[in-house]
Length: 325
Length: 293
Image 1 (tube, rainbow over the protein chains, first blue to last red):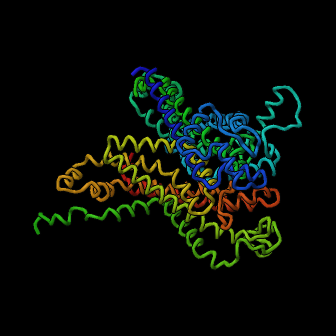
Image 2 (tube, helix red, strand yellow; image 1 turned 90 degrees about the horizontal axis):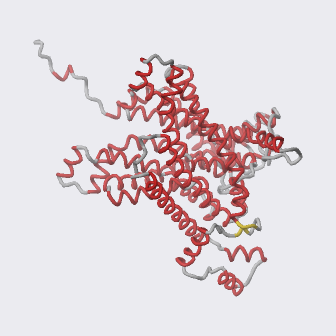
Image 3 (cartoon, rainbow over the protein chains, first blue to last red; image 1 turned 30 degrees about the horizontal axis):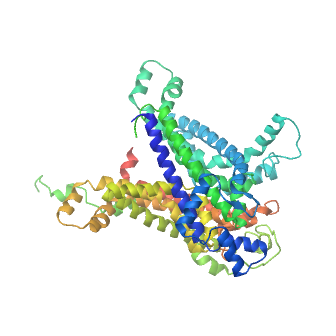
């Protein structure tokens, strides 16, 4: 199969997954006690049965389930995710306004986690029984066992309250005025603790994996050949072996996308980071169903698209995968 | 005596797989220590609330009394409630939900993985697509939606955790079934007329169990973390105490009383750490071949 065809098949499959998410979303909304009419009636301070029936007819809630589902899917495909009565804003507008903050946090944290993880993995793979190796094992255990919101609060207590190095909450300090660089530096200052917290879950994972694959690669024939040619260890490790050890890490990073979103919800809540996670938390508290379902759909979209991109990136990096279905 | 000794004396005595696994497990000191601490935590959860007596919702003393002061071992929270009592009651909820959600995801995962791996073909295709679907749903958000829409009762929270956590078990079970169903002893029992159900659950499943058991142990830990996350966000039954919920409700007061957050977090951390140590030990004990690699 050629690459274009594979991309097409994958994209069609991703679209199918997305429709499935929509059906699930709608079914949950349908099954849950209370509907839009109840919400509107509540905001009007109550309504009698006749008005309720009128609202239900206006919003098409009296039509059969399948018809309602169809019109819901059509609306979402035009990126109309409904209206939030709590924020008095369209859900898609709300999501798009919060998206940049989340992307900034999540992407920075992932890059940091992959970088630190791979460096730790490579260092410990060169000495499988050394101190660094034990350190990676310990780190993996701690990274898995510590609740991420707790790690965040501990960092907050240590580095914002006891030693006031970093701000306690938010993304920008409104009192700071200045040009682009001043504002960027301010955001970077606010980002330090949330990024470290979110990365802490994944550093352990990546370091353990890259340690294992690096050890495997270092024992292979072509590395022995490179050694025989007289290359230095540094050249072998960073020019030859690392390339091959990276592709499992990329695969894993792609698989972690849904975990990253989950982690972001907790980390954003701890640090009041104004992204999608905080929005999800607030709309849960406010019982704002359209918003929370919109976020669920949108995050699934991000995960599906992210998986697609990971898949393509792997094919570009690893020539052995090209042309495989 | 001739030099033809009894062959039974020269060959090592055959030992049951169980005692062999137990010996491997006992050799892993970290796992044994983890198990010992887990037993202590479980005992504290079962007998602690009864022995300690104090109701975790009662306001017993002035707020923000630090640990050790005024006779309260772990101090009091922002409403003057005894933190020790909350921790003991919370242990019950966290552990019970952890076990129940892990059990649910093992049941779902093993059923789906077994059917997919055993039958193959269209059934496998459909079941693995469903598994992939659950893998792209952001787990925490999906559970948050379920709990928010259908109510924050303990069974609903358990369901919300279990329904998003079974995919790893399904994948492991499927790949084990794919491997084992081709083995000769399976063909032999098929030839002697065993039914599909019998082949799946009493011929293949017992041999597929070791990696599933290890995964199940780890699942209890991640379910406890998951429940802690949900209750930290306030998605919990307001009438019961859980570790995550103590942290969530006290986190505004970390300036006055950081111990109300650090101590319950430490409880979660130690419990999950011990569970993963035991999981590692089980892995060594049940898959001895992996150890030599």
